[in-house]
Image (cartoon, rainbow, N blue to C red; front, side, top):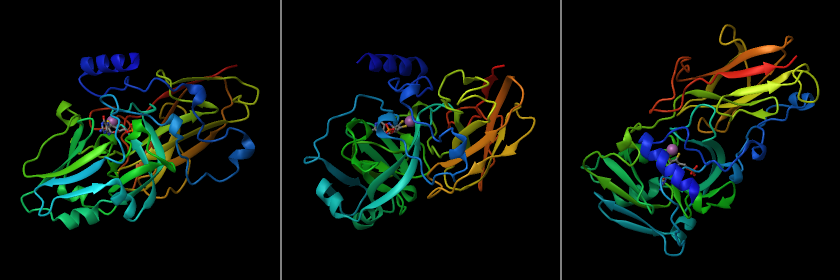
Amino acid sequence: MKRRLVLKRLLQTSGGLVATVLPGCTTHQHLQLLFPVEPQQFDKPLPKHVITPLSEFYVQSYASPPTVDQDKWQLKFTGLVDTPLTLTFEDILAAPQEDFYLTMECIGNRTGGQQIGNALWTGTPVLPFLKKIGIQDKAVEFVLHAADSYETTLPITDLMQSDVRLVHRMNGESLTRSHGFPLRIIIPGRYGQKQPKWLTEIEAIADPKQGYWERQGWSNTAKIDTHAITQQVQSQKVWNKLSQVNLPRTGKKGWQQGVIIAGVAIDQSQPMEWIKISTDNGKTWTHAEINQPSSPHEWTLWRYRWQPNQPGKYKLLAQAKSQRKEQPLNDKNARDGSAGVLKIEVTLLG
Ligand SMILES: Nc1nc2c(c(=O)[nH]1)N[C@H]1C(S)=C(S)[C@@H](COP(=O)(O)O)O[C@H]1N2
Ligand SMILES: [Mo]
């Protein structure tokens, strides 16, 4: 209750999604590390997938989550279509099912913020249904409507892709109420605002329209920009607002035996070419080790073992290059996405 009031107030004063609008219920201790810190573990290859447990997966909803009865739920295809169609949840389950890894991030996520997560989703492609109903030539966009009255729009061709899916499972479980039970749509390559939860209607329209967040100035294309995010320095998660990390010299997590820096990187459509790390505020750079995710829509994992030899203050930066674009170092966290470069201040204690 209280959190919603705070959230509402923040939304009112800022007029949109802001970095300070965070779930607030997750704390450092509950968050899993991407990688173990023990040096023995570091010789093992990078994992192919790290998924975010449901207990840690961010929730971003503009209102309180609606309660939807799966047995009564329907998905309607309406507007400029030749044959309107209504699907039940049984119809969804009767269609071919696909599992896929995909990273979801909020466009308002501050670099280093926790409004990003990777999950294994299950659902059925929407394309066969769209082909079946026949989209009329006059139609330019689809409006995606949801049970909480949220709406967002996409050009016709962007929805008519084979990897756009009607999704009902997340990490092998039915969607939770807060993540959109019983069904949401996922459009790969876009920030979270283009992935309506509690989906109820897909409407073809003749004139372009903007959705809820888009009307408030957030990008209408909402394509994920190339960016790297440092998530872990030694055994510490870098969620903290000031991005400051203090490390002792000795002990299991001490800096003397090496410091593990690890994170993720993502782009709207292309694989990563490299991730570079600087520990001296951008003067010199070294390549981090990266993994090969299942698709460009799943985050690329990277890690780097830094061997400092002096105590003091250091500034850590991570930069990504996808096959599409090099992340600019001066990028800001703006209303077209969270591609800013995070500077982490690391203090190595003497
Ligand atoms: N119906 C509905 N869908 C929605 C939203 C919403 O408020 N209502 N928020 C969107 C935003 S801004 C984001 S970032 C993602 C977050 O998905 P999650 O809460 O499952 O992490 O859902 C999107 N889908
Ligand atoms: Mo979002």
